[in-house]
Image (cartoon, rainbow, N blue to C red):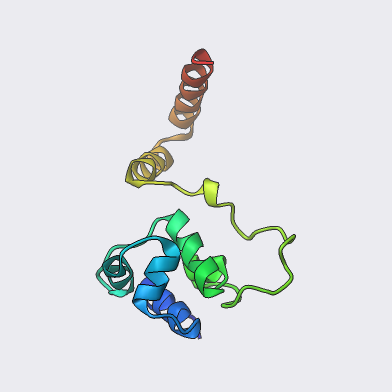
Length: 126
């Protein structure tokens, strides 16, 4: 049965790993109150880098933790497997999320023009 809320998946992953909120916080490098917030239905959500750390600390599969899809547990011996997602492909902060959201709302022509402008701006700095 899929678990819809990220907060519920984090809590389940932590409990399955037999970790307290404090123990998970120590492994991830945050305060216990941050873990409590992540597990609260109306709390904050961890960034992608923290989500990866939670998956590693609990043995949960990143894809399941992030989306609710796929296997709940990370497969053993799959160290050389192609990851389901590339963490760098996700927005790293709220500013990048906003840019991506607004970019996707643009018509194709405007997206192409903006992409060209960004290529020019970033190549001029090199």
